[in-house]
Length: 221
Image (cartoon, rainbow, N blue to C red; front, side, top):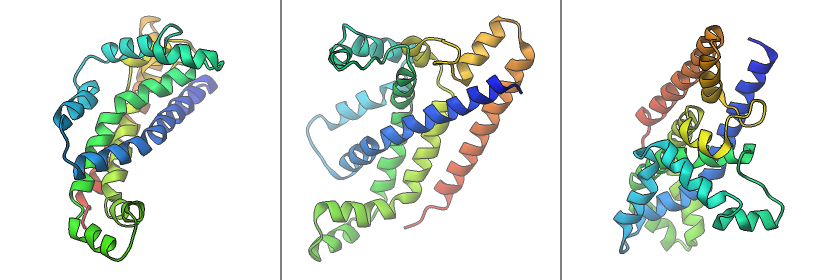
């Protein structure tokens, strides 16, 4: 393993972690909302949020490209502030966050659904505010499921390829992640690097799945 390979692995781990950290507040809020509230259009909204799990990743990448390109609604606004997203490391984080979010959300929602409501109601009757009930009762009781979602989302982010390629491009040393490096190395005929990176990727994914499985199996309220 060369120094460039080591930097590549660290970069991939870093942007994957950043994507999950950025997604967590939205996952907690939306997961609790889906688990505890009933409202018109709930099934439709949930289906839309879960779409990145089933549509081709390149489609998600195309949508992000349209939204965050310089002529897109978000991209033009960010451009006025001097913030460039497309074909930068920020685009990598954005793509990974969007692709990992459905898996993270599903785990968090399930975790909140398993929290006994009577414990939340008891805290409310003791004078706790809704935020205190959420932060001191709901989240601690759902912590194992939330942690499993974080680990699974992280593993999904590590393996993301299609959306990242569309919105960030394959720029060595700038936006290249392990999956993109495997693709580039394969087409350049560098089989040794392909199998080395594939082994690293598989090893990290195995550990992540094992940890998530332990967290899910050991979850009790």
